[in-house]
Length: 251
Image (cartoon, rainbow, N blue to C red; front, side, top):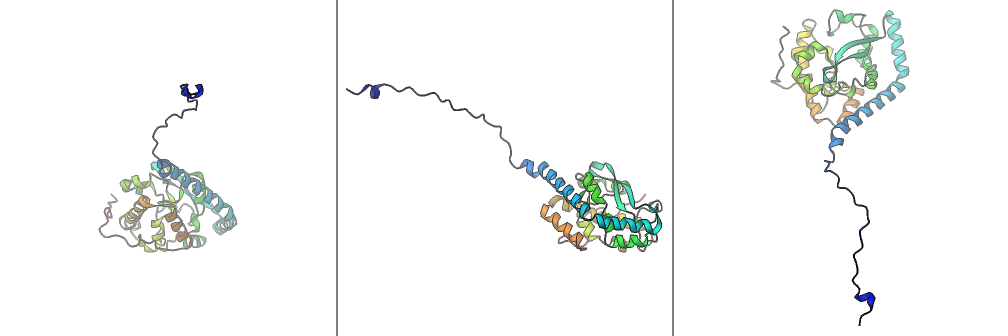
């Protein structure tokens, strides 16, 4: 006869462990590939722009003093440009031309007499763009992105800008590097016609292409090429033949 404790039927114990609710299926990587990436990029841009303003504050003060002493005019120049989602914002620059120069013509020709002596130095080394770090901190611009343009030119190429202005415009991009000496290619006459038929279409082509395949690594490359004064970017040199939209009617 078997002992009682062996013959007794053991009752199953009730499972008292907490049950985990089944979580909905979430596609991993979506946040970090879209919204998260944009948030990180903007935070990076603001941080770098703020650090840049602090480190470059002595240079900014010297340039501001030089501009003021030359003709007594305003130090900064602001102009309404088209930003993300076709919204307007004020682009900030060091003034490199005589006051109210934009009332005469919106573009700068080769050997333009409106450029001041200090302005020639600023433009040569792209120092007139330094105040746009304030635009980056404010959130209107980013470090790497297509240059913001005037409303009249955006309307001429609205299809391309619909792609470009899905993101914030920037201080530099491949088009900015390739056209670093843009003013030298400008004719003395018919400046606007040359710009909208020869230069701007290819700049937009470069900006659209870069916006589709940009990475953090490529952004660093563009920033360093801009700082080193390079005028070429691998894979972005030379206007393509038969580029669509290279002829526009000024009306």
